[in-house]
Length: 209
Image (cartoon, rainbow, N blue to C red; front, side):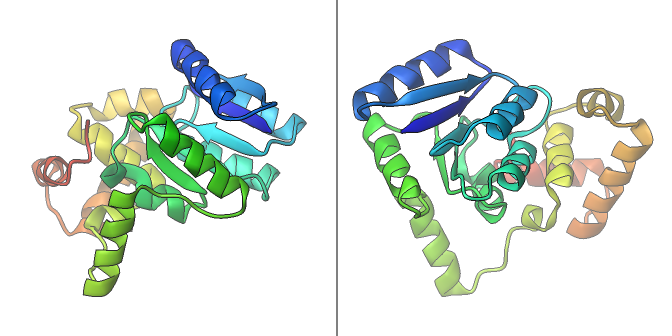
């Protein structure tokens, strides 16, 4: 099995590699610590599975997911991240991720997830599966933040974490005007009026760590 681990923390990559080496026989690993390295390794080699963090230098994990799927449509991508399921799971699965797990998952669950997605399936935790099933039974409307594009959602989270428009622009390599445009779209799509409304919503929906 060929596994690409994309995470910017060296100690986590090492621990994950050791865990997977114990769980699977004859595993070959690749490692990437930035978005650019992840995309380049996906371009150069064929992997049985890519394990990807959402918080990566250079691009968000969701942007990298799009790149990998474009380069290698048949390669399953497992999002393994510190971000709780309510923040990114729906969005990641909708974008084409084969699975979503948080970093506090036990090794057995990680092994189960990899086996399932390598076999062509998709994997979510029992908790998330139950939540999705309940939503379907109730015919529940999607949360407001699910109406946002990935970039708009990213701006919402950064706004709620206390970053200024200038700070967001620098971090995202965008102009202040472009970030302000995203903010305007967020207000329009959610029907809210002020930054305070957005921050209150993001905190109540547990969209910030």
